[in-house]
Image (cartoon, rainbow, N blue to C red; front, side):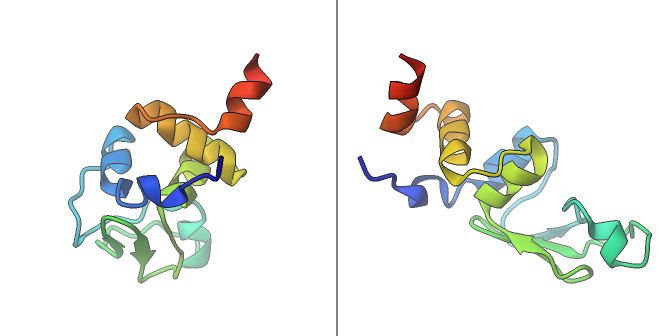
Length: 105
C-alpha cells in the first residue's frame, strides 16, 4: 500500500489546536517552532512573527518553516515520516500504514 501523505496536509491548524496553540489559517501567532530563540539572538520575542496556514507555517523572524509532519516532529519528537503519518492517523481517526499493522501482529 502506497501511503498518501497528502491526506493530513491541510490539518495543521487542527493539530496545533490540539497542542494548545490557538490560531486560525492565514493568521500570525507567536513562534512556537523549536530553535526560534537561538536563531533570533537568544530571545523569544513577543511579536506575532509566525504565519500559519492550513498546510504550512513560516516564521518571519527565525526563518524556519514546515508542514503538519514537521509539527509532529517538533512536538512529538517523531522523525520518521511513516511514523508521523501513523501518529496523525491515530490522532485524526484514520487508517495507519499497512506495514505498521504487520509489525504489531
